[in-house]
Image 1: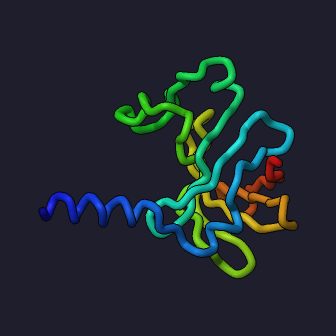
Image 2: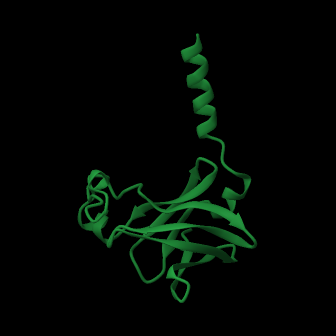
Length: 138
């Protein structure tokens, strides 16, 4: 009886997303790259999960081989959280961005340009930042 209740409760919790997560729904293409992310609820935040990339197009079973943590190098790239712990701050979101190509993690700020466009700025230090545009796929 307890097992059944816990399973139902867990299934219900998996479907609960923060209300603001809808703002990021869908698949977003990182402009000028083959990378596409699907934003989804991750605990009490939102994550940008890898839908596709150049490595995945070449090898659909590609792994996170450059991860600095050896135990994580066998993770599949498909579905990997590239953006993580995104939480609303001001007019956008703040969190972390993980770059599987280098194994590096940086702070990221995401802001909405309009309903179908985002800008993500990742910084390795206060003055060492790079901004990328993301476009919602139809």
